[in-house]
Image 1 (cartoon, helix red, strand yellow):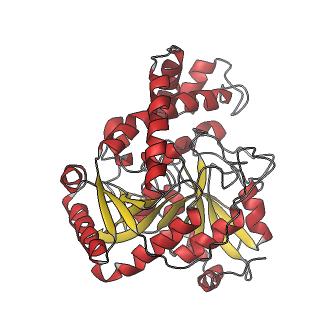
Image 2 (tube, rainbow, N blue to C red):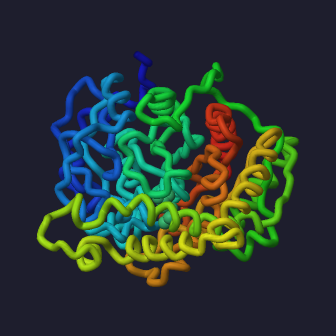
Image 3 (tube, protein in one colour):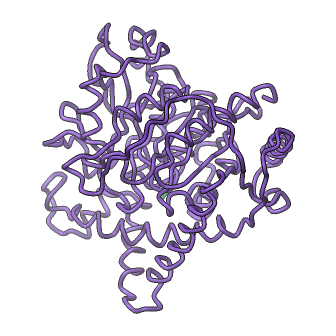
Amino acid sequence: MLGYPNDFISFSKSLSLARQDKNNIFISLVCEAKDSSVPFAVKDNICTLTTPTTCASRILDGYISPYEATVLTKLKKHDCFEVGKTNLDEFAMGTSSETSFYGPSLNPWDPTKVCGGSSGGSAASVAAGIVPFALGSDTGGSVRHPASFCGVFGFRPTWGRVSRYGLISMASSMDVIGIFSKTLNEVRWVFDVIKGFDRNDSTSYDVKENITFGSKKPKKVFVPKLKDLAKIVELYIFEDFEILIKDLAKENIDIQEIECDIFENSLPVYYLICYAEVSSNLSRFDGIRFGPKNNHHADVWRKDSLGEEVRRRILMGCHVLSEGHKEGLYEKAVHLRKHLSSTLNDWSKDGLLLTPTTPSVAFGINSKKDPISMYRQDFFTTAPSLAGVPAINIPWNKYKGLPYGFQVSSGVDMDENLINEALWINNFSKWTR
Ligand code: GLN
């Protein structure tokens, strides 16, 4: 059994906090605190045996999974126990945790604001000090985005390094289980426990490495062209980012500016692929297999039991896939994805990619009405998802009391190295914050 980082221990007795869930962070709670174990929270699209797994959807309200996710089995072997299932955007589709059937999670820093999404409840549970770490899922940014809005670390591992068995699929080619915590030490500890091959997930694998946890200075850092960035993010984020770049350059780190096109193009590519995979994955929610059996007409059923964003993606996915010829939208997106992946992986050979994580701090509940403005929140997070590479939100600063973070990403299987470089950047720039 791995030894725990010291920070874990003090949390096990403070679980009564979870009972005062004024912010709607949890969908269900599991049990009382156990003195000797490490509590953690689990996004409610990861299957547990003793509580319902709802994906924050009406169609799965009260659904009990017949099996448990591999990540949970592994954590339990290391004396960790789950305290509850956290709120999310319905089926993890969203960027604010507002599309939940159970209502939005409120940001612990300001309850009039969203937590980000889709793993908003998990990010909030760590930010509020209820648990030392939480699990989320990240398809196009759902760990990194809420981590930025809640001011905690959020780590998306390389696709395949952590078993997805028991994670309810959204877009399988990008879905990963990720980690929230207030320290990178804890992130690494949890990653070491949950990573590795699992015979229940044929896409999972082991990586032989012996990189120990410790700060490592990056040699080269790729950043978006500052003049482009100024048009994309709010001024306070831009100014902070500029300071960081200058500080890194003073440390003799090679700074390379890149065009913002890569992010601008990633957004439509991500959404096209996501729609296509969602429409296929969610075909099992046909009104027959899951949910109360009181209406046999699938179309009517779906309207009653699936929210607007989920239905939008299923329909868009059917459209995208039904084109079915070489020049179709889906085929174009897959082609662009390959190009994008090789670019990101090439950069990672001698450097890491550094960007803001979110274009702004947390916005007001109900303030974003149209899907496109919500999708643009994912501006910086979708490229690493498409490439399948690891990425981390480093909580950076606050604006008017609300946190925001910066994202670092690297190449396939460079997870341990990325955590070490993120630690260096986090520690190095502490004084500017
Ligand atoms: N916000 C993105 C979306 O709505 C990402 C969601 C996710 O990573 N699960 O698709």
